[in-house]
Amino acid sequence: MVRNSDTWRSDHLLKRGFIGFCLICMVASSIQFIPVQYIQSNQVNVNNVTLTIEFFGAYIIMLNFAVYAYRRYGNGNIFKMLSLKDYQLTAFATVMSFLIAQAYIFMFDIFFQNRFRIEAIHFSKDLYNNTWSLILLVLGFVFLSPILEELVFRAYILDVAFSDKWRWLGEIVSALFYGLFHMRYHNLFSFIFFAQYGFWMAWLYNQTRNVKAAILMHIVLNAVTISIIGYYYYH
Image 1 (cartoon, rainbow, N blue to C red):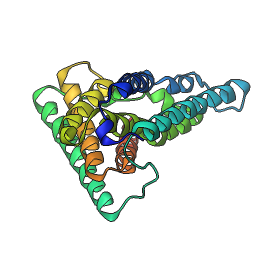
Image 2 (cartoon, rainbow, N blue to C red):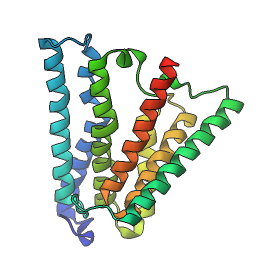
Image 3 (cartoon, rainbow, N blue to C red):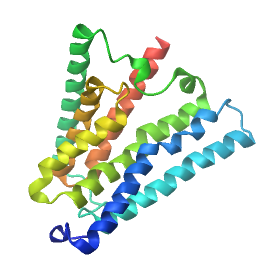
Image 4 (cartoon, one colour):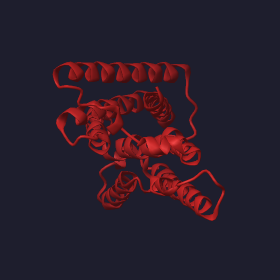
């Protein structure tokens, strides 16, 4: 663990920067979801089992790397329990981000002819039609990816790159990263829609100093998202 006073020590800077770069590239690649796209049936066969092993293997490697980086250079305690205040702040940030997102969609639905078509937000209907791939999708998108992304983009980056007096700047940078990596239309409208989620997650982490709060918020938001998309596809 690196003390706050050591944040910009020259002997740590290059190593921390390189690890941060590797973590960002790792998450941005979304390589863990590639095997899911090649599962063609619900049958237990060599192909499906192999792809499933690759899916979990990728997550195991990435999560271990993220945990190592956070414990080695971060300031927080990954095993710290959430307090009642932490849960309250998590609920507040989650509700606020969701309400802002819905207001944003409503506004652009009126003025810009629905730029946020739900089909383009995340996953195709084919993944929902296959039970095997759907189970992996839920496990990855709802549970494993939020853990991975929060360890990297909130816990590691906010702790390593920003001292206490620059925490507000970390929230802005977090929003930029989240918007860039999640936008689906490659334009400002989509970027802002997703960036505000990143801001609230970073704000929550800075308020609680507990990565579990940001993970919980991310899990809830992703669970709501995947449920809305599933409802849209079948109703």
